[in-house]
Image (cartoon, rainbow, N blue to C red; front, top):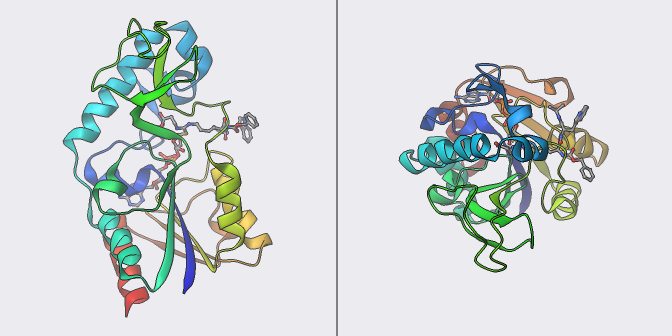
Length: 229
Ligand code: BV8
């Protein structure tokens, strides 16, 4: 039973019609994502940030998982390998594609968080600054998303799985955002085999034992077919 840890980024959802961050250099309504997706950005203009996430939540609801998401679910369902998907993505396309072991290290669009009391609940389709927390009643609700400068979720669990893996695969990520971008180096240091599946070379390609480039809906199913042969 091989243990496989798979990191995914925006590129795996691109062919489902979900925009990536740095294709159009991460601009949204003339704002850099690094400015909008921060606690400071939320404090400065909560309506703008809610608009940003409401738009992305609607886009994900209208999207479908693609062949790459489904191939990873097939690999897990086959049962010969222990598969863990660690995704930077805040969409639910891995789950809707059939993956069961998924960690959203940057949170999810389907989650709401109270900035006052820390209560979490399923996010409504549209969130507003004036929504009050169902637990403490304070109007301090935000998307349950990890912004720049905030600690990603379940990092100890991720690092433990990474170091115990037989294979680390990185799919559809530019390797620009840490700590995710550092996972390949952690894997190399732990003696774990590494594979990159991406549209083009990423910032971290040089760290990988093997790199294959092409659209995820082509190269991910091809890789899974090899694993299941
Ligand atoms: C933290 C949620 C510390 C929001 C996101 C200087 C140096 C090093 C680090 C830093 C630094 N300054 C600041 C930092 C830290 C910072 C960071 O790394 N900044 C970068 C910009 C330098 N990181 C953080 O702040 C993180 N937190 O460090 O905490 C800490 C420690 C202790 C205690 C407290 C705090 C938090 C980072 C999380 C930020 N939130 N997302 C949202 O989604 O709206 S990040 C966001 O951007 C995404 O979630 C994702 O992770 C990232 C985008 O990356 P990708 O997924 O790779 O997307 P991208 O568009 O870049 O690339 C797409 C790739 O797909 C491309 O390579 C493309 O070729 C490929 N592709 C496209 N189409 C296809 C395809 N591949 C295959 N098929 C296709 N069809």
